[in-house]
Length: 389
Image (cartoon, rainbow, N blue to C red; front, side):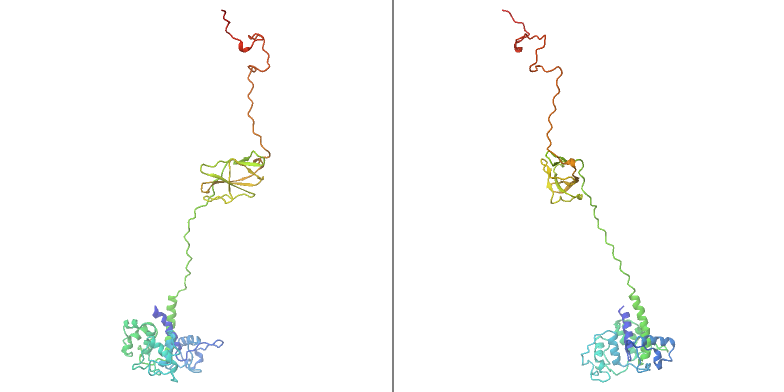
C-alpha cells in the first residue's frame, strides 16, 4: 500500500512546480478567471484548475498569466520531489556531488540541497559523467521515472510490462507503464505518451488533479472512519454469598443470686467457649468465618455479670478454639434479667405428719388399758411368763 499513499505526495510535488503558492489569510483566493490564458478552457478543465488554484497549490507565473505552456527544469523538479516525498534536506550543505551544481549559481544554486536529497533517496543518479544538468528540461518520461522511483515503486516497475509506444525510450517504458497504471500521468490525445516531450505546467495541473482524486479515494478506502472499539465486558468473578452465623436461641440470661447481677445460662457445644461484650447499642450480626471482636471477654460460668442497666445489649459469642464465631445472639437486658436484691436459697419442704400420732411422743400419757403395769419401765416388760423354779 506504500505506493498508493505516495500518490498524494506526488500530487503535491507537481502542484508546487513553478508558481506554487500557499493561500494568504485575509486575501481572497484566486480562480481561473484571474488568468487570461485560462479563459478558453472548457468548464470541466476550469473546474480542475479552480480546485488547485483556489487551494493555493498553484499560482500564475505573473500577474494575470498562469503559464500553461511554461516548462519545468530539473532544478525546479528536484525541489518539488524533495518536498512531496518528505525527504530530509540539509540546508547547510554547500558542495554538491554533481560537478555542474554550484551553490553560487544565481539561477539554480538554491536547489543544491534538494538535488543532494533526491540523489541520496535514489530518485536520480544524474545525467552521467557526474553531472545533473540543473537547467535542463524534464521530459515526460523522466518525470514518470522520477515519480515512480520517489514512490518506492522501482522494483514494481521492473516487473511491469513496458508500454508499446515508440515515443517512449526503451529505458523508460516500464516506468511510463506503471505511471499510467497508477494514474499519475496519461497518454496524449493521439494515444501516445510523448515521452521525450518536455513536461508543461498544463500537464502538471491536469495530471495532478487526477492523481489527487485517485489518492483521496485510496486514502478513504485505507482509512475508513474508525469504529470505536467496544469496551470489553469483564468476565464476572464468582463471589460466594456472604451469610451470617446462626443465632443462639432460647433464654440465655437470667437474674443472678446477688443484687444487681445477671447470669448467662447458655452452655456452648463441646470444644467451644463463650465470649461476651456489653454495650449501649445493638450489635450487627457477624458473618460466617469471622473472628470474635477484640474487646470480647470470656464468660466464667461460676461468675456474674454486674453493673448492667436495663436497655443495654449483651453480645454473646459462641466461638471455636481458634476464636472463629460459631453462633451469636444480641440480648437486650430487661428488668427481669437483673436481680433487685439478694435471693435467699429455698428451704427443703417439711415431711407430712404420719396418721395416728407419734409412736412415743414426748410427755404423752399412757393410754388407758395399756399392758404395761403402772410404775414399771417399758424396757422391762416381756410377753414371756415368768418361769417358776
